[in-house]
Length: 121
Image 1: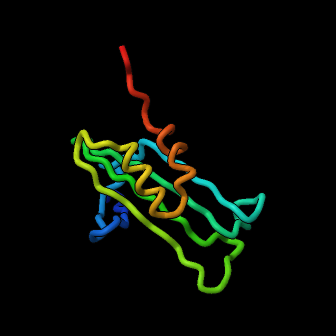
Image 2: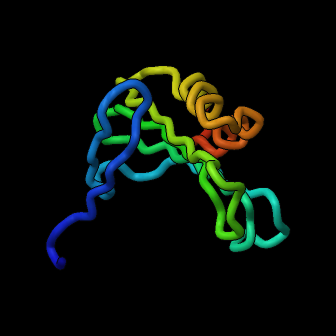
Image 3: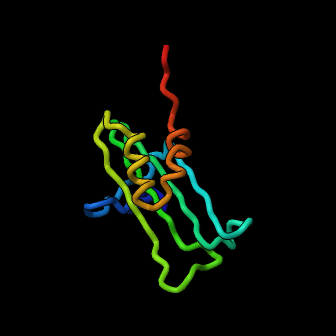
């Protein structure tokens, strides 16, 4: 598909998903991890989180807690959450809310720490 930009569908909390062009919404912070194994491909659970920012200042914070390659118990659920933020919105606060929604609030600070540093000159 040369000449076409890759489109990504993102699940948001309490509203319909959105589609974005990856090139127009680059990742500015990310964090991920797993549990249930020392090796990621055998993990019982895996989680990931991303923050994307558009050139106009809007941001999307989204995350998931999923069943890993090692499998989980029968009936286990996967969780997804996300927020679309206007320019100037409090991105760290959204990181906390989104990570809490997927049950990984303990890792919110890891995602926040991956955000671009604020210059205090």
